[in-house]
Length: 457
Image (cartoon, rainbow, N blue to C red; front, side):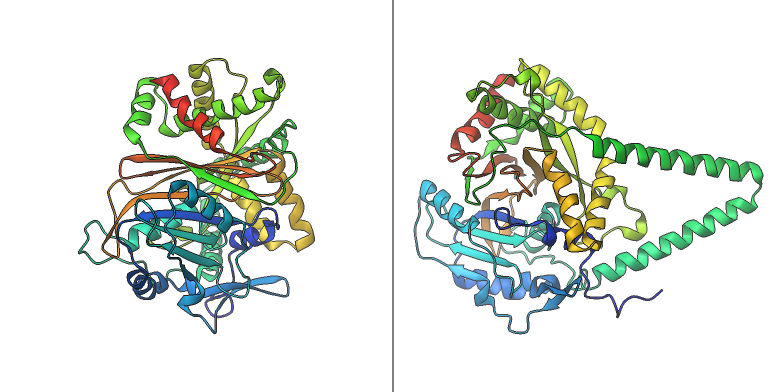
């Protein structure tokens, strides 16, 4: 089954789903901020031309042809369309306001949906902002791109990313899926010929797998919706972002080691306390509150070999689990251990794969049928919480030291709060993006996330 010609420019179903899920109030756009010492416009322009654009997907834009989304190369592509340089010299507070303004600017759909802004004179080092539609890549893919196009020493050359890794993404997935199906059919036939006892064992195994998947789908669909609260008041479509100063990753690791938890558990427990304080402002009875965070889970390890992405390939390969946040927990340790229990249960379940499968299905369905699937995701959570592990070592972009890296996640439907946590070079930073209807000024919420860590010290 050779699909290399007919399907080579199709978007994968999950990439197409991200295009169908966005709305004017909630564009599906990832935002990344890098603080880079000494980066100039001329140096960065050469970097884009020589390295960034070696990834063919970044020269293409998603175009809808009938009911199908296709990657089509921009016939009038120019770097200047995707790089904006400002001579402003904002301090940290002014930079926060400036980035919030960029968050509320739509990306044009008649060009590849990404854009860089560079402020070489920003206080504390050049500020480099990237906004990119989620259909291009997920957070882990972008970290892979970052690691491939930066270096561990200022005078080293980037290893780069394969230029052709993504040119046949949809075709490779369809072809690999077909080959996998054929191999499973052949294996089943061979086992069938091995004897009745072997067939019975195979049938039992298949039945148990089917029951497990069905049970997982049932749990996913029946997960209770969040209690109406001040976190979901209806969106205004105007967003504000804030981010923290870097914190030592060792502080989180020491808490995790002392309690037998994961660093991600500690981060979620800190977010839980901040949300608890927000709800207490309205004097909600926290014992009656159901509150979930939509948490992305990498599914690359769940895929068969035939469907594993190529090194450096940009893709969307994560599922979503809805983690119940124990805002009714009265002590820091109670909240931490309840978070630990829930994250272990969900990550060991089939729910990450089920949610990714639903996203793939949404990308294949007619537009008028996609909305109910999108609503399924947003009704069951009040916030998106994403933790992306970055490079453990300092990286250099075009020979310039990257001091910090931060990102903000998109939300879908009526979810108006996103919390991002990123680690880089032994540091951790929190980022918050919120619709003004949810948090007109998210700095207090961010401060609560940071203060929660003191409860475990």
